[in-house]
Amino acid sequence: MKMTKTPALFLVALMLTLVASFPAAAAYPEKPLNMIIVFTAGGSSDVQARIMQKYWDKYVKQPWVFVYKPGAGGILGSTELARSAPDGYTIGGLNVPHLVLQALAQNAQFNPGSFKFIAQVVNDPQCVAVLRTSPYKTFQQILDAAKARPGKLKVGLVGPLSGHHLMFLDFNKKFPDAKLSRVFYKGAADQNAALLGGEVDLIFGNINDVMRSIDEFRVLNVAAEKRNGFLPDVPTFKEQGIDIVSDIRRTFAAPKDIPAEKLAWLRKTFKQICENPDYLRDMKKAGQPAEYMDGEALTAYIESLQAREKKTLEEAGLIPKK
Image (cartoon, rainbow, N blue to C red):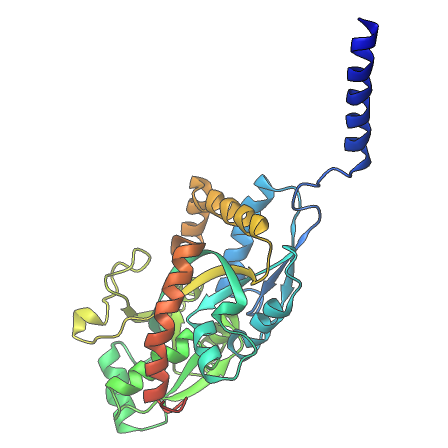
């Protein structure tokens, strides 16, 4: 019996020694993740990410380190994310259609293929807002004033080649005689401050941005297919016979070469957060129109958007027709 057991015991001991000689695979993430925010602190993107961080911390031991890279309608931050090491330790909040438009028309050093998308978390319709003290109480009055005094009314927008800019281009196409002067800002917080301070006469802004100053603002119309739950008394453009629908999707992404297993883990974790009832209540309380879309479906949506908005930019003369 001894002769039989000895070789077996030797093999077991050898296997244990070999296993011990290899370091155990550490569970991802082992350290904090950088979270790049491409707009100013205090804007809608930042507010939403802070809510998500609260629930991330409930599920994950490693926190986020917020890195703000505002400017050029999100281009600076998006470029930073695209160039980051694809090790799973830098992710960022990106807005759509901003990144699509910027890749098409501004020689941006990224395109949608520069990223792997984790999830869409918000679908935020745009709207037209003025101060409550403004003489303009309807969108028609805005149109009449813009036609009577071309270029005199100033509209605040967040960044060139952003979703706000796209709505402005659509406005110009539908109302060529109503001339508004555009004023670009780095982020939503700056845009709101400009309207509050009288720098501009109106803004094309996201509902979430507007809701944070709703006591001072009057919303004239919402650019959506149906009325929004946050502003149920405000008519859509479509209700008034105007075909303007415009929204901004808030998404999260990583550099394109992130390892597949880390991307899968991030997608699973974000989905878990987005399905948490407490998270959804916090989003509603903050005026954030939550709408989850998984990374694969989001990638397909962005691909369809590229073809459509390429035509829009060609018609506006922002890129040459091919």
